[in-house]
Image (tube, rainbow, N blue to C red):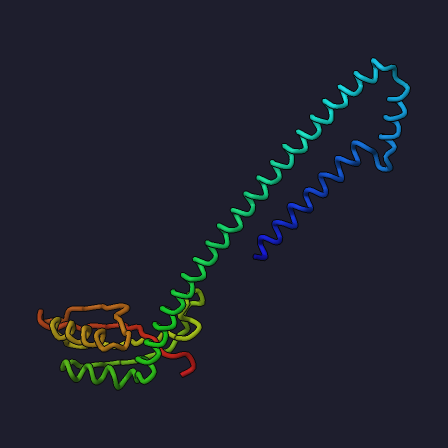
Length: 219
């Protein structure tokens, strides 16, 4: 409703400006042009008066036609501006709806990560998974680091990075351990894995794994 009122005010203002400009150009600021024309007209002969009337009529028609064309042109411009405004408004509403939808998904994801990582205790967790898969852990360490500022998660969460070694381990047990960690619903994932062969055996290897997960900021 406000948009229509603004467009109406613009149209009325345009009409007033056009009318004022035309009147000023034709009649002069204080009607001095009209006075001069009338005085000159009465000084003409009847034949000259007739010619002047015909010429004046043609000029008036041309002025009215030109004013009408200008008016239509301005109306078309205003109509285009109005259409563009409505298109922009429609696009803005669509973007707002999409933003709200994505924000709801984001909040749901954050809530799920927070619920699952809030009670995560890194060392006891990995020791438990190692025991369940019969593997040996060495040099287990963890640290909390900030998430990059351009990541939407950075305002609520931080990374937890875990580094550990798995000495003398077979490939099946290594895979079992990695899968068990990643399927634990704690949003832990393997970030880097290095496997080195052991001298004198082809069945066992030394592995070093790095994991990355999330923790609630401030905890």
